[in-house]
View: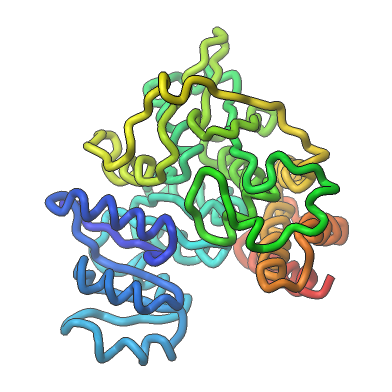
Length: 379
């Protein structure tokens, strides 16, 4: 049986990871669960999956649930708790389903401890991709993508010579406002933005999908995961989300991965790779779908996507600054402090003031992250 730990167990990817575990109880043991503040759901997970180690976001929340934990369960809190769940215990694989750059320290700790990573926390590679991939290579750790797009590319590359790759294309649903003009976005609400047409995701990633920031983060992540230059990474609007991404080879052949929009498929593949097991996902009927549509990406309509790719091309701390500015701007929008279009503007204004460090170490990355957040909070 494979022992796994989940960072972000009460979020969208975390709960769907546990759906996969529940479908294959003979194959998986849950070693550790780390959650934020949703202690009610966490306690339900604890009593169902019997982890040996649990963490919550604050010492206060830990004190609230301590007496309700089964005997023998170790309890932690805060960022130190994330590291304990990631690097302690006996897990072979750690699913990093946290949202935001908060996942960086714990992911690196898991890699240092020799855990394989089921990577759903794209911000880790966006913020410090060169450090993470170098450490994973040195430790012999697999970075197995959980995002549907990167899982698709990973699957399309199986058994292929990387030198034969001409390009990869990441598909984008377009999010909640894919058919809106910039002018129509002026007065959209938080509730409007959270109505994603295809996927069931958390609030932050749903807003990122609407601004197309999420696709920009995925381009940067793909650069690090697959060691490809940015000029070989494309983005294509595909409203149906049936083709999850594809690879074109130098002989003009294209291999694509298709399926119904269900995150449990890439999650399960990351946990069972290289094997494929029975999945709870609905089977894809192309006859029922009947047609698939595609549109070239409009970078004027989605300026944050172009900013992300520009930052990736620049390298250094530019991607760290991009991610930090976006996290703060999205949080401000979700709190009702700024309008939707202000998200793009804050990212742009932050980047105009950013002084890039070309080859940053972890301390420089963390400093950049901190000062960028402070700036984005007041712009």
